[in-house]
Amino acid sequence: MILFGEMRMDMTLGDILRAARAIDGVADCTPLVPSPYMSMAIGHDFLLKLENMQPIGAFKLRGALNAVRSLPPGTAGVTCCSTGNHGRGVAFAARERSIRAVICMSELVPQAKVDGIRALGAEVRITGRSQDDALAESQRLVEAEGLVEISPFDDSAVIAGQGTIGLEMLMARPDLDHILIPLSGGGLAAGIAVAARAIRPGIRLTGITMDRGAAMHLSIRAGHPVEVPEVPSLADSLGGGIGMENRLSFPLCRDLLDETILVTEDEIYHAMQVLYFEDRIVAEGACVVGLAACLSGKATPKGPTATVITGRNLDMQTFTRVVTGQDIQLGDRIVKGRPYGA
Image (cartoon, rainbow, N blue to C red; front, side):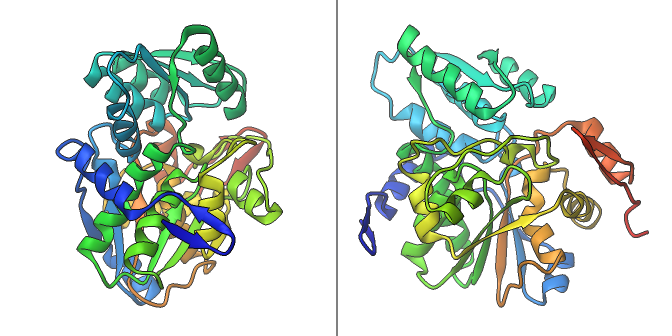
């Protein structure tokens, strides 16, 4: 058990070790590889945890698999709200257990992610224009059809599953000084933080997100969960609220992260180009916020540093426009393109 001031955290390293056993052989041990370009840019080793290599192309499989495998026999089905990757993870895990899965998503989710979930045999419900709308539909299905809801971030089994990433990173590199964590609803950040603080208490942990619709960042600033408008972003996987009744991921992120940083769409655009041209990696905009923070000077690591390349389930037309230096339309704004190296 972890104690922080007056708050008791019931998430422990033991929970994460149990999750590691639960997902063993399916969603474990992705590579942690150096980025020579980013290492030169920050003056220290910079490592990439390649969660884009998971069977569903994203880290979300860890938490979803741990949660679904922990359900009692006879469970009729599961539901969740998702910006894409959590839904894919729940669909994969539900198919493995031969139970029904209904994934609720907003109209802002890219079609490629919707198609990927349907390909895994899940039902998809498109509801409203925000993660909060999708959450409301998921909660309705719990009441109306008796499905079990698996939160993308505010669920102890999900957080423990995501925490296995931090466990693996520090097993591979016990000398890590700083972890840069893409930050959305906080399941990934909370899980990594619990593992990292237990193994290496002095490590620096930074949550990073886009500067529009930064729900967890603004909630931490306010001291309680707040609602934010959800807008299109190159880092679409980081969109959505954290839930006004958030019980776990908010307090864990608030108490365990050293800081949160916002990056702009232009900085995300450039970092996507860097990851592609320098490391030859195709990845979502959400993956590169750690790179963006360092390249912009907003994060200044003092020692060996790592970030999580969270997934590869992106719209390839948008990605092609980014790497070829073309303009990108994001709702009411345009991100001006520039060829890499120009």
